[in-house]
Length: 127
Image 1: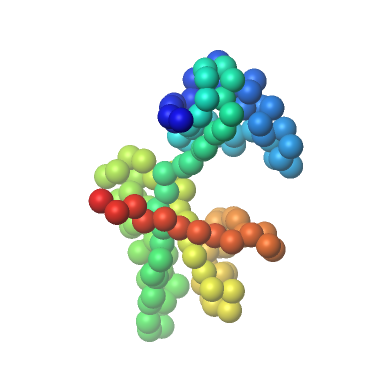
Image 2: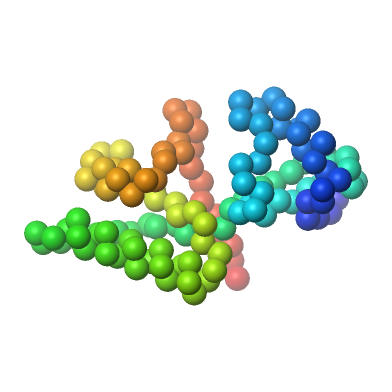
């Protein structure tokens, strides 16, 4: 079975595949890469992903920790959007007990993605 890029002819089939979900549809096709599997117009599966940056370390010390964290985050976002031209989403992995970091990412406007019962997984492809 071979995967392929989404084609407009797949739209109705995708809507049927996603109809059982609480939030049917692909959030923003302009930002997402969408792939299908199965015949054109009748795919049996789909995968949508958005290129993003995974922030796995952010540590600051001293009296100006918040200012440092904001500056580092803004610098990283600017770099990713001007150099790579692909960043549309950043992923922050935060320990539940790290209250300062939780407040920081929420103040940035980050939206919590983990519902109770869900687990966040990351994959680093081997090059």
